[in-house]
Length: 294
Image (tube, rainbow, N blue to C red):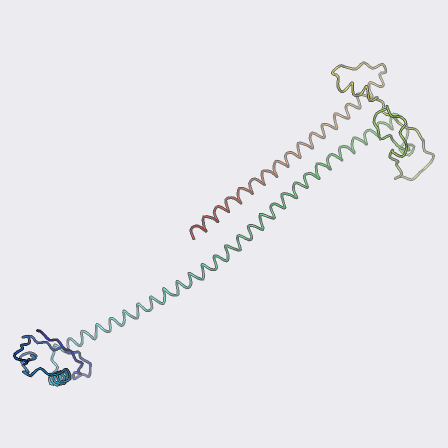
């Protein structure tokens, strides 16, 4: 059986050398006697204990002289150790770089998550502001429509007042009040239900003349419901009724123009709302995809 044993010894240069003693020829056992060979030397002994073997091996290694082969072996392992140390340093530096990169990536990921949360809050706030803005736009459109209606009504009332004043040949200061009812089938209206114009100071005697509607309710409704041309006995009444119809037509035309404008504004507002809703849906889908990827 081949025996291989090692020990550390110092060469002439002072370096630690790990010497290996090999039995090239093999060990022989004869009646409990064993021999250990090193090179061409044989040490026949009886079977000793481990301590005795270690001491004899140490003495034998001490007796060996350093050779060129051992020096080359020492140089080889020295270079090998230096290479391993340099590789170890490079690996350590690489590990430190990887550790710093991982830490930086973790910090960047946390910052990105915080920024994403802030962006989500800002998007929700922006959506709420857009909803509020669209509600205010609707409110403004309703107010604009009401304002247009009142303006048209005011213009129509002014034209009626002007026309009535022209009929009576009276000035503004001579008119006490006008009837609320536009038809003539209720002549006994109480002054308490009528509107009194007290905005201007009195500058002379006022007339108590009540100006009634020229077109009675029955004839007026018959004229509106029938497609026949009415034959007037008095040409003056015919002109007056035609003028009244013209004023009504102009008022309706103004109303149509205002309604068209309102419809256009409402359509634009609705389109903006639809566009904002679609953008919000796309943003939510993109946010959900990003969360799924993470």
